[in-house]
Each structure stands twice: as C-alpha cells, then as structure tokens.
Picture 1: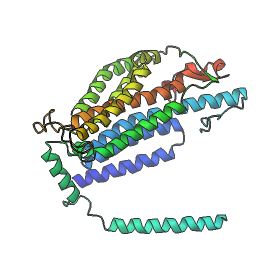
Picture 2: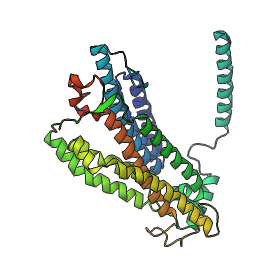
Picture 3: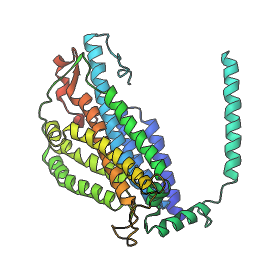
Picture 4: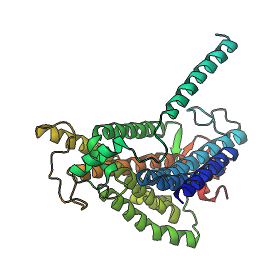
Length: 99
Length: 260
C-alpha cells in the first residue's frame, strides 16, 4: 500500500517536473511550478517527512511562483516599452534580459 | 584551451563524478530499511530534552549553530535583494490605480486571510510539539498577509504593511537568536546550548527548553524577511516606473489578470 503511494507520488513529481520544463511561457511555467510544489509536498508526506513537506508547500507552491509572476510582469513591461518607444536603455541593471 | 580539449575535460570530470556517485549509491542502506543509526541517536537526544518533535530538536538544539548559519543566509539574501530592487535615480513612483476585484475572489481572500495567518502563528508556536516550526510558520504568515493584495488592492496591503517595522523586526529577530545563544554562554555553558531553561513537561507547549524561543525568533525573522522581499518585488512590479515608461498606461492593469 505504502509502496504504491510512493510510486504514484514519484510518477506525479516526474510528470509535473517534465511539464514545468515543457511549458515555455514563464507565466504558465510558474503555475506548473506551484503544482509541482504541491506534488512534492505529497511525496515528502508519504515519505514521512512532514516538516519538509510544510516548507515545500509554503515556499515551492506559494512564494516562488509569486516572485516569478512579479518578475515576469516587470520584465514584460520593460520589453514592451523598448519595443514600442525604441528606448535603448533596456537591461541597464540586468533586469531586461527576460524571455 | 581549445573547445575540443575543454569538452574532453568536462567529459572526464563528469564520468569520474558519475562513477563515484554510483559507487556511493551502491553502498547506501536499503530504501525504507529499519536500521537508522543517526536517527536513533537524534531521537534519544531529543527525548532526553523533552522535545516531542525530533526534527525541531535537531534544528534548534542539536544543530542550533547550523540554523544560525541558515538564518544568516536568508538575512543576507534579503538584504541583497533590497539593495538591488531599490528605487534608482532614473525611476519614479506611480500610484497604482485601485483595481476592480471580482466578488468571489474578494470574499475568498478575506475569508482565508485570518485562517492562514492563524495557521502560520500556530505552526510557529507548536514547533517543538508537532511538525513545522519557525521557518514554515513564518512563510505561511507572511504570504497570508499578501492575500490582502488579492482581495483588496495594493494600497490596502501597503496600509497594513509599512516596510520599516518589518525591516527592524527582521534585524531584531536575528539578534534575538544570537542573544539566546550568548545567554547560554554567559550562564556557563556552550554557545546556543539548550541548558538555559527547564525542559518542562513532554509534549506540551512549555517544553524543550530554549527550542520554543529559538523557534519564535526564526519565525519572526522569516516572516519579516519574506514580507520585505515580496515588498521589493511588488514595488518593482506595481509602483516603480522607469523614465519614459509612464505614458503607455500599461502599468495600471493587474498581474492577476495576466496569464488567463
């Protein structure tokens, strides 16, 4: 029973991790990353590490996707301005080199 | 060095690393086995100090010095982000317009906010008894505050989250951890040794000596650090505008409406 659970959780982790790489749009990627965080938390719980699962849930499925989304928004705003206005000052502080 | 030579170097190094890793993995104890020499010793040490959660005993008692290092890493990382994300001379602030929030989202966010905040505080307070602790609870409490951004808008969040006290709280909590360690030293024991307080009754809130104190310090440090970190990112994403960026009106939209 436990082994079946572990194998299922491992397969889910492998699946969502592959999806996180396969999805190319950073916004969708961060959502897939949140799902991966939840699945990893399940895996850690099944492996009897609830402490790590809690950290993973809080950081991996809430904090990291949120930081990614905010970064994408800032980078896109800069990219749009550079494309529209032709201002060549993009990436002055290394922030404009996004997708 | 020619590219060909470099490739060979990488291949040799990689092959050596792979061989060593495989050799080490062959020597590991079996997956899910019943022989855990390190675990047995850790459990014994944690029980002798009346700590029900052995993981908390390892992080805040047996290896409290290690946790001090981890806390410093987070502190330095947040400090670095704050410096990098500060408002520079060629940027200015634009007040974000109040955004319209659909009613179900608002209701859900405002309903979940107090529950999530309380859960975070509960996890911090019960670190010595049940899974969790300062780090986990701190992150939960700090992210819970940001539900206000989802449920209301950025200005509402800024009202409950003035940054200065959180920056001071971050530094204060980090020093509290250090002072607890120094207190043990002053009392004639080793730095961060868990000898300062009585060990209390097993499996209650008042147990495990200094573990709850260190847990609270870490909880406050992590919560303040996450709030300050997210504030830096939010400022850049919502409020701070480059020269020439202000006239396209694009920044009035909401990150929540993107990617749908």
